Amino acid sequence: MVTITTQYGTNKNSTTMKRIDELKKGDVVSCISRDPRNGNVEATVKSIGSKYITVDGVNKSYSKYERETLTCADWSSWELFPGTLDEYAQHLKDEHEREETIRRINRQLQKLELSQLKSLTEALQNILTPQSKG
Image (cartoon, rainbow, N blue to C red; front, side, top):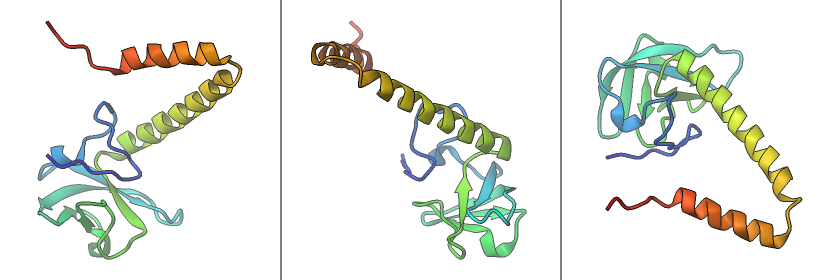
């Protein structure tokens, strides 16, 4: 199993994007440009090798991506997103909502006393620790 950490994260619970190890030939992906003058485009996975993922349906200069970083091998201003443009838009929306929620919680946490923070930490630990089935 390959776990890739990029600006898109490695969230195994994400409903808006495939993990890179789930990609296969023929899947639709998005080529995302960091330059706002370029439009983002959808492409189809042509091949997945040990070092590179190659896509069809885009300019040849940004059709080959490093598998480890999802950065274009020839133009570092392009990145591969493992999903459609609609999924990419939803991913951005989800990330924005997540960041806003974290900021809101952080403001609320700053108002708590130490004993309340300790209780909250314990409760979170119970939520985040997988329960053994028995």
